[in-house]
Length: 438
Image 1 (tube, rainbow, N blue to C red):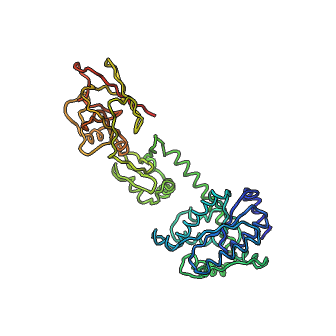
Image 2 (spheres, helix red, strand yellow):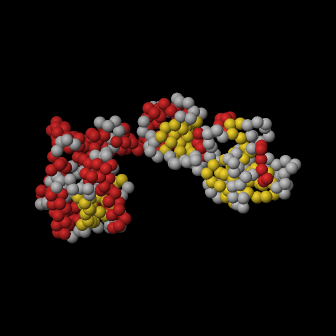
Image 3 (spheres, rainbow, N blue to C red):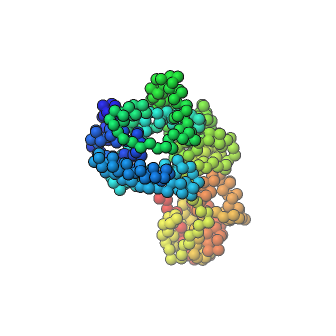
């Protein structure tokens, strides 16, 4: 096994050679074999151990055992203790989830503190099979059936080609000591039930099952790569960036076949994983929204609008004092006094200074807003103006209003001025206000 391990590192993971690495070692047989293999290969390694304090004195004994083993190997040893049960209770998550969060958060901190490049874990081929079966029962899609990745960011799993049987044989042959975790024998956890009750029966029926499964994973990963390429090509074709918004034509999406599979793969990177909800959005009215933890998807007439989810406080107000000429936040405006009426663009407005009440106000829309459109008689609700101009929900939320000190709208910035503040033959002082785009 040592020879195969060395060859595997040389061929598949050569970046681990002559690079500072860390090993996540629990003290169990898998991680102790990994430690032995890495030391014999002369890799530049140190050991990280998490004491989750879930097994009473056994947890402390694991830690002491590992310290002795690392001393004998001449490897630096780092450990931390967690109040795992209390953490799980506080966050209302499972013990397994709590332990995972705690250890990987600590690993990342140690990576920055100790300066190692990669963290090695002792996941092997049988772990891969267990993960596959668990995900198969969760309807996780092809992504969940491609197994544990050998390299995932800074985490590397060099034992994935090796079976639990090979690891056990190596440990016995080389007199490697390890600690038994009594919780691994319990079958109340789904992974342990697969490990102890189901997989042994499968292997008994078909002894070469694990080898064939490993080959099948390779084929699934190759197929997944082809699918990812096709999805990326379709995303590049349909997803059009327009500033901070991605516009996606509904008609283009509806032409995709199979639609549910395409929707899942196209929107999964943005946190949307329910193809049913995505299909419903394609058939709903304009203005309907769908949220993920990181993004928002809005139906806007013939398109879906995709944006990052960010706090948008419509109640924010910013004041502009009479002496201010250049405003840089939240948008860039320039205010200057001129002597003559001049032609202006959509990004400019001319107003009668004597009609203004300072400080002026920059704000977003509010309920009941109205203005008097320039060149027209009478009032118009801002909401009606937005509707007539076919503003999307995002455009409504992002539209800034320049208002008088009494909150009356002077200018829908970049869109339409208010007739009440226009210059006339009686105007003495003219202010030119310009919206400057970044």
